Length: 323
Image (cartoon, rainbow, N blue to C red; front, top):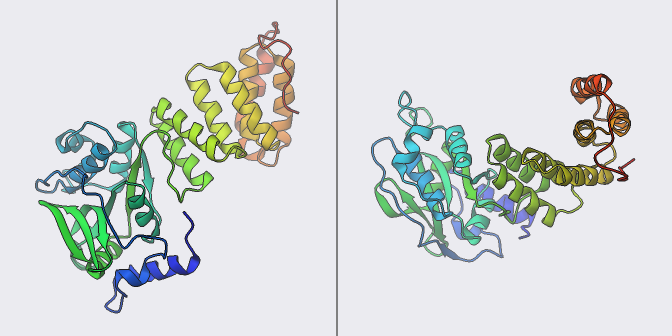
């Protein structure tokens, strides 16, 4: 969905939280509907200090995960702080096979996510900057004509909050907002590098299949993006799919011959397969690539392994590798 710079700027102004903020209707992008409400979003009444687990459970269940707030308390609640930090919510999301998608600091992406059917978890400061009262709620809709935001919040299944109050509380809370993506979902506003970084976070958390689905979705949307192919190769290798890894890393190199990471990974794979000459050739190109300096230690480590290896028949046969 395309948003004009003017619409983004207007909506950002609407969320500054100052007394002169315009009503919601004045800041909405022209293409956005006047009213949205994700009425089927589940609701979990918050227990004391448990707004983080309750809000995250709302998003996870809406995405198809079977979970209760109590299940998330050990993962996302810090007793010493009597609350949850955003990093804990992000990590817990990954543990349940979903990709946390942290939104930008204007409401433009929040509106886009609602249009896509995904509720948005937000952090609010319901107190003052000097005396904060932190609270997680779930943004499920708005009514521009009545100038209200609609939330799942605390013990209220449907809380209507005047837009300026909602905007001010979110602004004082640091403008943190996130949603959760099912494997393979891509937000309309996503950019390649940001999305692939989020997929890599899933992979690092051990959610390999979910990460692979994210990389596949990235390749489908951005087939000429080498980072997507690099990530897909990493995921394939972790799953034991050596052919798939070789294909993906080779594609990444064809799209970006200076991709030192893809070349070093491919060299490691070739070493495993006994293709020592080709492994050395890929290492030479990795070292000479613009990003080779940053990977100098990894490249040197791979080269040492190649030099110590005993030559065998290359198990990839007569395959042609990228120059």
